[in-house]
Length: 335
Ligand code: ADP
Ligand code: TRP
Image (cartoon, rainbow, N blue to C red):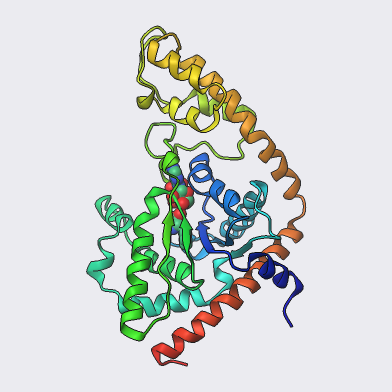
């Protein structure tokens, strides 16, 4: 018999478009992840039938310490709940709970050519930096295609840097449908244009890999230190400044709503120094982050409850994915 929780979620989501996204549990999420991806999840949870995935198999392309992976995965689940995801509405699950993801990846491996995957940005970047590329890292876009295609997903909310992966998922779906017969729906990316890329402390894209992040749940003291360390040029307070060239201003855009027009005016006309701009940013960013920080502390107290949420989410996702996988197996000829 169907679990009553599943039935509730099913009834509530009937007729809604399907949305799936995932985040790798590697290190702590930062405000770039939040504004570029995580916030959209919360904003969208009422309007879509949402699947949110902790991409632990993607994470091991990068980090291979079991204790850390386990902790990071649990932490990330807590983070999602703290930012406002409601497990009564959405399916929150671990990628590794649903073996169809890796099974389908193998089938995609056999349909995809090496030269095609060699065009992926992430692979090309790793090559350019002379990093040793594992087969798993090379194959990353196909695991992600499987994540998406198993659930008949309509939209995938991601940051601009992930757009190519959605294109690969679409190409892969088309190829499978052509070779074996119709099984997969073509997903669309959902990118919030205003916050396409959040800059980090050094002005590069904020990223865990660049060690230039402002972590989402950092305490107040550290938050202040980080904000005050944002890289700027050496213009004096009096000099007019182009707000579009300022890393501090880019973050004001995200959290300084009420102060924003005045800030912009003072940038353009001159009369605001970077120190003052950073102090205002700290005040606004802290006001924005503090409630989430407090909620996280509460939620983290009950880890059994979080494990239960993930277990249920895994079962629910598995029901959907297994159904699709049965069809795929039949089309491929391995059922
Ligand atoms: P990181 O680069 O820190 O490892 P991930 O690659 O894990 O971040 O990205 C997780 C999600 O957050 C993705 O959807 C990605 O597009 C989004 N994201 C990451 N960094 C940024 C950023 N600086 N600006 C906007 N979105 C971002
Ligand atoms: N590759 C994504 C990232 O680095 C994470 C991810 C894995 C994902 N599977 C996904 C995102 C499926 C959207 C849909 O951010």
